[in-house]
Image (tube, rainbow, N blue to C red; front, side, top):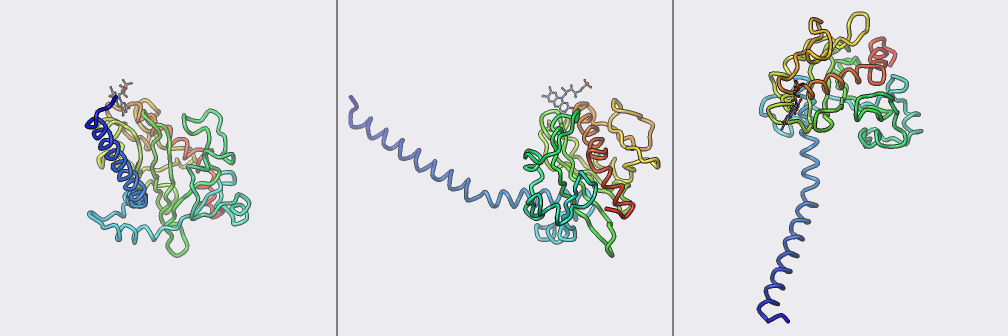
Length: 260
Ligand SMILES: Cc1cc2nc3c(=O)[nH]c(=O)nc-3n(C[C@H](O)[C@H](O)[C@H](O)COP(=O)(O)O)c2cc1C
């Protein structure tokens, strides 16, 4: 049925496919640690950027050295306090290896009825990063995630030592459209956040993002992204959720009172 040439062609094609697939698989597996390290570096850069601690053109070593000033802590969102060793032991959690994203999908997640899309299950323990000076919180980095138009958006909200004034907001992962929703990443828009109070003097959430989402004359108003009403609404909902009672509100109140 086959002549010799056809058979040779098939053998060459088969061997070529095999060699290429081995090469691609080896590269994919071999480069995974590098990809993971780059992802971590990018995340840490974003934390530093939100904390206004990222030097222009900083090397990977400089980013790591600056990031090393932060202490990783877990917050128990049920008690609104830092997780105790006993709570972590009971939950089988090792702080260094804890994966908040995976925990949100596990059976231990807190179920929040009526939460924005993607936030109906949240991890019972949240990873926060604290920069302390003389034993007192000087900067507090809170992870936030919430719905964008095209998928979940992940970022960090950084608070100053008064546990209320926003130092910055930085999204490090999202699927929004370049030039539209992806403007959450631009310096111009991020510059609207520093100095805003997270809560009013009476303890209500102060932040309103976009003119369709609340009082545009309030001190906590942040202009929305033009042409990206839905991404803007997502950011608003995200911040409202995480500053609310299902998010960090109780923890921040306790921390301010010295009771966390
Ligand atoms: C290809 C494409 C990509 C879009 N990307 C975004 C986006 O990332 N974020 C967003 O809020 N709107 C995006 N929009 C626009 C929304 O569909 C919507 O028109 C916009 O949010 C304005 O809403 P409004 O008409 O209620 O003001 C995109 C539209 C198109 C056609």
